[in-house]
Amino acid sequence: MTAAHGAGGPEAPETVAVSDITRDPLVGQVLVPERELRTRIREIGEAISVDYAEKPLVLIGILRGSVMFMADLLRSVSIPVSVDFLAISSYVGRDSSGVVRLLKDLDHPIAGKDVLLVEDIIDTGLTLSYVLRVLRTRGPESVSVCTLLNKPRSRLIDQPLKYVGFEVPDEFVVGYGLDFNQRYRNLPYIAVLKPE
Ligand code: IMP
Picture 1 (cartoon, rainbow, N blue to C red):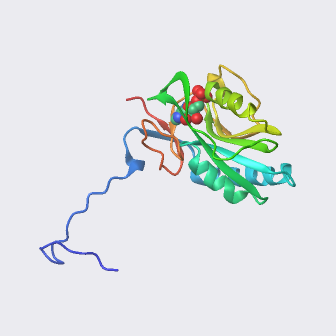
Picture 2: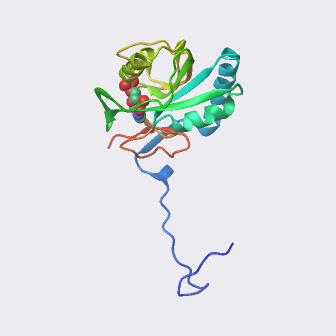
């Protein structure tokens, strides 16, 4: 394919403005590079495939932060699974409002099924505890948690976590699905968001 040139012809090519999210001045230290994400997610997928072999497993993702993790995790799970999503809202900017709202419910019943909740990050644990409470009212056989990131130092409510990708320090992180005001989800790695 050839590039289109401006009126100036090949001698005067148009300048193309490139906006690269990885060069955003607020994107700080890379905490988890792409390669480490790939390796760890493959390990978790293999563990899930062993632990839930022969069981009707439903993976439930929390929109929107878990989409990248869910997509890559799914590719690493080799047993038959079904997938559903919940949407909730709790964060404005960098701080949890403490109020969790269910914006989108599951599309399918989970009664009698083994459920694995797929989360991007557990911080205070408030969101997780709300979602677990909602799911347990639906009569699943079991509900466990798989989180890509864990910030144990900010925890207010503790819940058992069956699979954890990485422990991260108590800093606001972005990338690989995690956002700050809807930005930075498309960074291919996890990085610290610098203070503004
Ligand atoms: P918690 O209720 O405080 O545990 O927060 C859980 C949710 O808050 C996660 O699913 C994220 O969507 C969001 N969150 C918590 N910490 C961060 C962060 O460091 N970066 C981006 N989102 C975060």
